[in-house]
Length: 315
Image 1: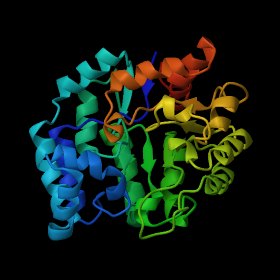
Image 2: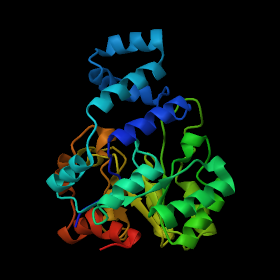
Image 3: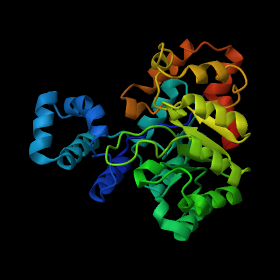
């Protein structure tokens, strides 16, 4: 069984919500990410990189981001397309609503309800919603059927251990759902680079020992610290979404601790996630590339689905 812990679903609903976030100033139309994504964004718009940078200087990044959304809408996947993609990649189940681009909580839940044996919906909300947000999370789980809570603290200019998240995390414990917290360096150049440093997960795990925590995206470049913290706490796992295996295996890339300990004492703690949309690499290709992992087949089975199944309570 293969479970994709971060599966992009670029449907019309997801594009619509991306536009809403951009219009609210909460999108990825920010410097830092633009520097990394510019070549791909330029290609999607039919521009050279030089033309893209000239257009950004003349019209602004937000205008280009909205133009990209128009392109995305034209090639949006149907719900059936998404399931066919999972079938083609050999993926049994996929978590949706927790990728870089996602639909609203309501649309994610409706989509998942169409395919309850294949799709696992996650809930996202901003930390500044406070107690009202925690109530919305409870509604999302009890009424909409969401089965996990996603936190990307750096987007809110907060640290992972900000008390603003305590009501949400307490609700996760009460509802017995996992939380997935982005850990690692981000690229937003207008705020501290270490807001999502994995060391802050330690305080969260101490405060909420029964909370199932998934440290998303490996914690790079602090991967060894992420592994160390996961070894301290029984309820911390690590996913490697948005990371290609060939890059993880490259000498000096910084993933040595995950590969080494993940084959040994952390073999029950590592989780596959594709983030295929963020990487602009087909899901089936990313799944196939995991065959290169230097793991016993029994351990690879844990990484590819067994560990995720335990976190999610499925299978």
